[in-house]
Structure formats: C-alpha cells, structure tokens
Image (cartoon, rainbow, N blue to C red):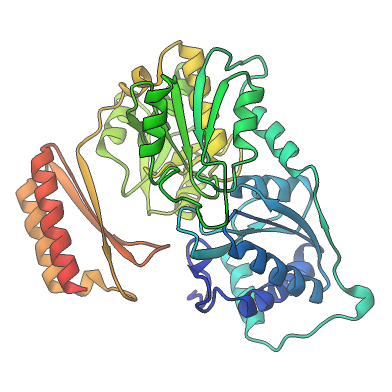
Length: 444
C-alpha cells in the first residue's frame, strides 16, 4: 500500500514546499472531512504547537472541513498526546495535530488520530489520499460545518495527566526544572508538576512562533543541565516541541535518556507487581537496556524505529510499555500514544515509591557506548543497494567481532541517514561510526 502523501508519522515538510502549503491543507481538510464524516461521525478537533505557520494551517484545515460539512473544535496550542486524549473524551470522529514535533519552526506537518486516540488505519489514510485527487466541492450552506473553541481543554488534560499516578502521591519537597522547548506544553506542563506539589522552575515557556526547539527541549538539553546545576534541583524534565517525548536530567546534571527511563518505569512496575507483559524497544535501543531487562527476567523485543511500529509490536506482544531512545515512551495502561508529561510522572512515581534519586534508579542499567551520526541527504537513498556502503558495514561488523552492532537507517521525518555504531569499546565505536559516516556521505 504505497501512500502518496502520508509517511510513518503523518505529513511533514518545509513550510511553503508542497505538500506543506495552505492550498494543500485546505484540500486535505476537505478530503479528511469527507472520509471521516461518512464513516465515523461529524466532529473533528484541531490542535497545534507554537510554530508560526500553525495559524495558517489551522485556518486552511478549518475551511476544508467546514466545506465538507464537518464541525470543528479548536484547541489552540496543545501537546500531541493531549489531542489524542481529547479526541476520545470529546467523542470526536478524529483529531488533527498541526506540528513538526522536534523539528525547527520552518517545518510543519499534520498527524491524525482516530476516534480511539490512535493513529489512523492505513485504509483510512489511503481513502483520504484518494479524495485529495478529486475536485473539491462544497456542501449546501445549511450543512456547512461550524467551528468553536474548547475553552477548558488545558484543564481537562492537566487533570488527566495527574490521574496517571496514585491520588495520594505528592511531589512536595522536589525541586523540578521543566523545559517546555517553547512548544505546545508551555502552558500545561508547569501546571501539572506544580499542582502535584513540586517546586517548579519553568524554562522554554516563551514561544514567539520562531523559537520552538531552539537551543532547548529534549533535542538540546544542555540548557536544562545548566539550570538544574545552577538551582541545585532534584530533577530536570525536557519535553520536545509537541510534548510526546521526554528526556530527564538527574541532580548531578547527567542526562537520562529514553532507554534509561523505560528501564526505570519497567523495573519499578516489576517490583510493585504491576508490570503487564514485556517491553518493546526499537532497533536503536541500547544493548544495555536489553541486558538489564533480561537480567530482571523481563521480555524484550525490538520493533522498527517509529512510534507506529512500537505500538504495533506492543499490541502483538500484549505489552504495556514501549519506547525509543529519543524519549518517545508509550504507557498503554495510561494512555494511547507517547506522552512526555505522563512518562515523566511514571518516573517520578518510581522515585517517590523507591525513595531513591533518579541517579540511583538509572544505575540499574549500564549503557553500552553508542554513537549516532546524522548524514544529510537529498531525496531517497537506497542504502542496501549501494555496494560501497554495504562493504563498509560488513568491514565494521567484522572488526567489532560480535562485541557490538552497526545500524544504518533513513530518517522518516528528516532528510537524513542515521549511522549508529554500538559496542563495548568507546574509542572503537567512535572510530567506526565516523569512518562509516564518511563512506555514507560520499555515497549520497
């Protein structure tokens, strides 16, 4: 099922370049409205992050949906997982997210959620694409969709986040720095931790439409590390632009990535007798995570990179926990999609329950040295059919001699090839990764 517009994570690209244009979004709204209304209901909610182009695409989608006879509920800036949650609780036929997640402001994209708060099935996306290729029409004026703003969206989501940990649990006595990446969580995230009793220092909460993910957030946590040390905080929480990823920092200012957070949550639930099934990682998950989980007799399987594939594998293996090194963690017993705030709360619950610091909790997993280098590319790259690249991969694997691994993959969201090498010897890992990256760069 080859798709023309939808990728593994919706539709994404540079603003102004097809299909990320106002004209296309108008047609997309109309096409989605026709498909979703005919099969699933007549109300769609729209939320967005803080990048400036969100205004333009929100209006275009709203017009297209209205022309198709679908009512619209506008949420304004809201995290992606909040839109998934509100799609369910507001009984909408679908939710639309206007966001390019961790990308810079010049990019944007569209993601859809089903009425159940999950990604749209392939057949629905293909149905929308088929409608896009047809001439646009408008329903009779008395059947046009109406739009209104949901005034209490933030409050609803804040209460949901708090409900994912025990009602009796308090964060009183914890000093927490929260970096919202000048993105979609800037209003709600500080409130969640504050209302649970923490002493909150909020940074990355002054979006101007252009500074989303700029020198802050989960992709650039150096600022968070600095502020945690300066304020002698107990913990730091870095979210990305749309709020579905989280990276944390311990009281020493050391990073705690998605693999380590996933281990902490799984190990805590095991100790409390609440772990259901195994854990799903990806091809990029650190070997240390796999070894630590297996040491604790927790099943571990790897999915392809991407939250869609992680979720599919979780459903196949009846697992409640899954995630990626980037901090995109899915707690299926709490919500339907990756949620940075909810995931952070599960880690904090483990900390409060154990009485240990985050630094101590992450000590249960020893990470293998791993280096990933992003190589820019133009267009599609067939790595598996490029002999020089494949020869270089085989040579690197032979030198690692079973004490590490090599992985090359094209990014599903950016024009990059990711070169990853992992092994026991850090210096060898660095040397092999750099050599392989240079071969890939020359080939592309």
